[in-house]
Length: 350
Image (tube, rainbow, N blue to C red):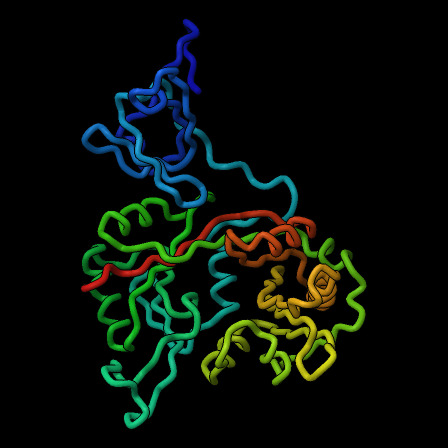
């Protein structure tokens, strides 16, 4: 907190600091017998009518009454992680997007509208289906990636987004991010102010690649350029279609890993996309009956060695915040959170 020359706490932020990272201290809730201080660090996303809104790293918005402030200051961007590769949010967002490509996309200024849906013959359409299509494969491949200026007002941009996804029979999603230098706290706050609903949040983790390769021997892991029937049978998403296969096979240098099981379905699988210095891991799945035996580490080690051979040096992956087992595994491999991303959906009835 900011302390003056007289030793007193001071509020040294104003509404002009909206968009900057701040640290504030406020009194506890009114009516509490014993007053306690609460500290909040994040991006100041609005200051209107005596209320501040601060967006924390995980995207949570905290509303604070101006009258409760006892101290506050602008703080520098979150420090770079002391271990692992340095990377900007935009670099990682683009790398992640290249590793999970849609079937079609369209530019709206610096925004990218993405879709991966399968055409359905007219006679096979469910009653009421729009444009002869069905739900897209994953939100990541069916959402807007807003890295920059759309070239029009936000109202016009969101109208264009609704039309584009509506033409494909899809709800409109925007993928946003919080928690790192250059992320999109202001856009997140504005979308939520307009009634858009955050449905899913996950974290993007990064780390050095070599420790992942060194964690296990990778023995018994078979690598392939294609996902065969066994790999797909272990993959957690059911009903894998031709659209899904095209998304799974997209990216720079794509590898699929399998560990033989007792039957035709592998005991464990994984996917890795090598893109320059980055190796992106996904779809690491283990037979529930065989978990906690190191199979996930074996899969990732084998994929990491192949990525090292192709010149990669850094690792990234995405993990949902409630997946405790995966988070423990990745932390043990030396990876850590870089930023949080969110899929925000258009309001119902629009």
